[in-house]
Length: 439
Image (spheres, helix red, strand yellow):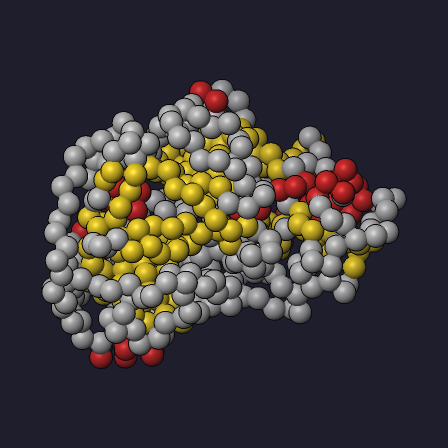
């Protein structure tokens, strides 16, 4: 998620999240970032490598889509990831798919000043630099940014958990198989990150796949080259894995619950103002600014809404064979039963479904329903733990965030063409092989 003033901190003795959602702040070389990064950016001279990579011709094929398998889970791994094949010759990289940020970057041997452990050798950059005057570069910097090196585009991203990446923007070939059977190799821009600082929610991956609404987002770039419609979506399986897609040919739009994107929150995938529904009844907790963010493992409610939700939850659990436990630090709030729980099925009967309802000005309200299995986990100690956290304590101010846990077993679609967000229950275990297959 891109927001200058958000900062997520972790503390208080319990793990408040395995993967805290991403905040991106892109700053000019002379301001906004850490002093060490500024000094490093001034010292780092970009070396140009000879490359045999040639530009790949791309023909408009907007009637097809790209579907990619996802791996990982909310718990115990703590994140989902996707494999992309980049470069020529093609090499695999594991990336964190993040609808909360725009820039895609890889840890890069440029050489790498500071890099974290990764599953693959660091990306070897080519000499196809994005110049500073390029519109993509301009979208990463504030108005009036002065180019220190006109021939290249420097970037810096700072994430909410304290992590960061500094590098330079370049172009390279991405390899995609289309649902039509065609193979596309568009040349797209990505960040070559030569200086990384791991955050508190560090994941051992090769980089980040930015899926936000900005120009540098991969789906925006694919759309600008006529490869797919400007639509991105994901289907996260509660059993682990799932799939990610670009384009609008893998679902039947008439079977999707749609709500318009908030136009006053252009940085985020937000459905605007929502109301908390608990057990099918209104709670009076309204006017909630809600953001969808695949970069967060868990969901968050602002302090007032969270306290109201916890009160309703505890009232519902009164008299049930569950007791709050203080010796399980998996998440801030956990309960034990008479014996350890093995699966959510052992305990979900004690919990009610809740929902976020969006009065969208269309024919009827859109309800994003969250059953117990989409807000609870079973810890390694056999406790049932709440995967909805206090966002205000986490530094999210008044934002209410729908994270991976609450998007499990749903296809969630961000349609930038129609400026709408949609969802439907779906079998996320097997990626669709042809158009309009979502179940």
